[in-house]
Amino acid sequence: MLRAAIEHASPVVEQIMLSVVTTNQAAIALYEKFGFTPYGRETRALKIDGNYADELLMVRFC
Image (cartoon, rainbow, N blue to C red; front, top):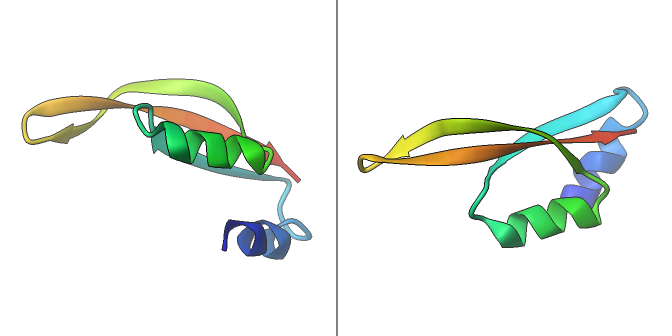
């Protein structure tokens, strides 16, 4: 599904951006496999049950 979304968007956009919780190593590895690279980190981006989580900001240039 990710491949299809990238193929659909690539002819009309210059970049695709996403964010992922830094503890989700499986998702980060998948995004890197599809050409996404980290460009930043948003600390304490989410608060779940009183606990904060950071998000990794990623981009793929088309």
